[in-house]
Image 1 (cartoon, one colour):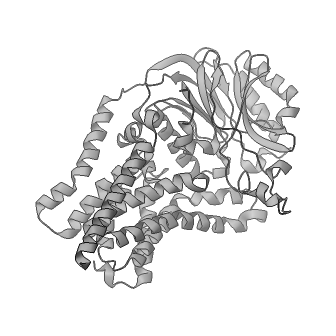
Image 2 (cartoon, rainbow, N blue to C red; image 1 turned 135 degrees about the vertical axis):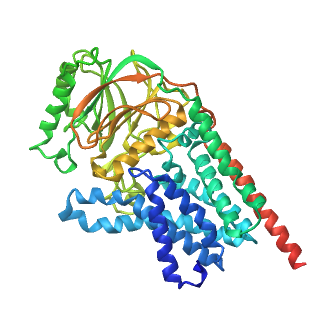
Image 3 (cartoon, rainbow, N blue to C red; image 1 turned 90 degrees about the horizontal axis):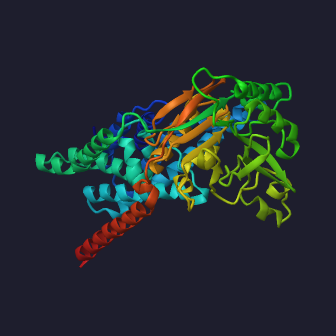
Length: 509
């Protein structure tokens, strides 16, 4: 297929389609072979690209297709109130897709500029693509959603997260696809193809070995956790005609007798689970404590402190007293606050300042809560679970991860499932079980190998009593984080760049 002879517009449209096809590897589809096939085909496409500018356009088009499909759930929050905000939905998706694609465009353009041969360009692309994904995960508060490693939860390959983390697994995925793709595009002797397939064989063998060494059933603690899912649609959640009905539903689930085992040791409600601010919630918390009949309850609540508002979670003891509190620290830009709003206030623009109640203020950072009888929890509120650097950001090691979320904002299609997939990744990376409770689902108990041991499906109201799995020992990734992969990428990228520069100088001389 002579793609180099196609008009630029048709080649870009074809690449957008490839990116959209590749995104079927993400949840809820999970068709990861399509992602691998598209990646393997990229060297053939790039071999006929004559300039760095056109290579950047190819990366941009691929990213538009990938992020446009993978992040389509981003339109859902704007459809909660269609009359007021529906017009923004396509612009939000376009902004997110083009923003993510811009990182890929940089990688593809730089790789073509640095590489002086097809192989050098592919090697440079592997390294620089991995580095720009680091940038997407960390810069501007970070947004690592729809990263390449997110095709792997639920597979043996996903278990490599415990060893090399999400960026290491993305790097391994690129090596295992782009190098064999380059070899096949060269039509050279069998030896070249065999050498180029070594990374793919290494990924396959290590995945099988880790999968075989994992226990079929995770060791369990003796603690029973009750997950409460009220299933409150976002357009009704704060409506006075419905809000207290959802509260009563949670009370009923909390007090219900279980036929499956003993009274729960901990009861967990989702994010923003009650329709009043914490300062006005004394009688509400007393009602929750009565329904819990002595069990502690962990739930999400909004609270006010002076002129500031916080998205928080609290632990109620058996008497209905707040025994511990955590304030969400990694907020959603434009969703929970307006970036630089406080700075704008210095210039007289006060509409967006968090001190004035325009959105939420950030808490101090990750923290450990010790829940008596259950152990040390690392609480996470909603979006915080997508950041592996935050989950591993405490000095103490928790016994389990505890996420509460309101995925009603994400609709009923891909968003909630992709959020769940990232929660499973965090459990694997840290070697810790996760208690996950979502307003509309999917609520789940997740073991340290990322497997779901109990769940309440998306869009259903109910509760489930689940045994808390025991934690594993600290994984390599839990001990070292992203630093080893980042340093390795930097060294390799500078080495490749230096080698290409020396070759260019010798050619000029």
